[in-house]
Image 1: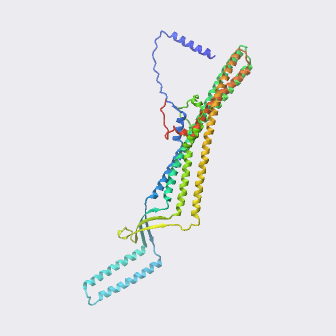
Image 2: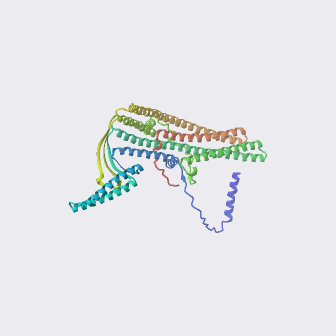
Image 3: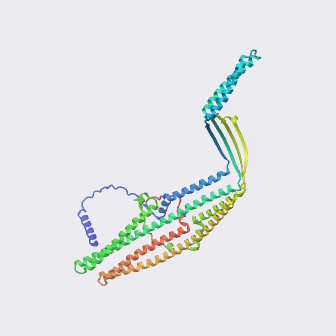
Length: 511
């Protein structure tokens, strides 16, 4: 029927061309909107977008920034420390205190009044100028007493201003080792960031090849559906002219529906894989952008089938795996912590200088009231009840723990590389066998198809041959995707997957 439809369309085109051969043809201009360029989303681009956009990696970067801030805090211990303090307070006297002070002030006032009377009633002052000075002094005393009485009613204000500068001269090199701890902490967090990037790239590769495999399954199911659809049409045509059985028609109908069911399942798997990939790339709404296109699964190359050199890959992994570098820095940090803890057996020597100003009922800053102080502070714990010894022992065991974990991690890395290399070799062998099997199954299916069309082969054999061909196609696609993923897993196990990935997601030009 497809050939008949094609001949009909061709004949119609020729007839239309002949009938309008002598008529002038006017050129028509059709305005079409330019198509949006497509962004080819290969594996490297998907990994770069995930590394640049996923919030988990951004959170890890914040951890690195925290470690760098801690390192700056540790370096500040080498510099002098300057602080300023200001204190102000007001104290209201109790009623009993006020009463006693009032009595004392009244007594002084009475005595001053009697002195003023005696001075005024003196018959012959020895010196008029001295008498004047005494009277003025008495008036000043009266005003001062009045002012003090008012201040007593308002309470007593105290203020203190101090500026202190200190510098730690010696602390048994604890400061040096704490700086080393902070520095190793920065390097450890940076290695942890690279490890998170490595694992993220691996997760993207798994999702990416899962998407490609599901799309290959769609193509396989569509080809299977098309093949059975063609046989169904032939069976219906034979049945219509009385040369075929109705059971053949029913058989191919069931086969078509089975292929459609496989296609629907593959389409659902594809949508789920797209969501997983978009989530890893932190795309809005966990959906791939409309302008993104994922290329089909590329066929294997000769290099893909070369067995890996396991020993050289292990040596590379031991030098480049970020989790190994993270473990090394963790061990270095534990060693520095143990040395810093041992520094508690040494004295601490610091020099300081201080300037203070105190005032009562006078909050102003008066340079005449500043009193400078300089000194040396030596601190040494003579006995701590075993605390220092326990702290050093704790740090020593923590250092040994980090060393043992590093040794275990190295064994894990070697195991990861060996296992990944074996999986690559197995995937290479499986793909080679699947390619050979696919060729044989396809040839067998084609021979049985011709024999069935000629009436020389039973339907059961053709059904089995088609099922075998569809299964072989699916297995070949699975073997190819498994090989691609196994190669990516090997790069992940060695740490080579980060070699071609920059820190920033590079956006290639759209095609």
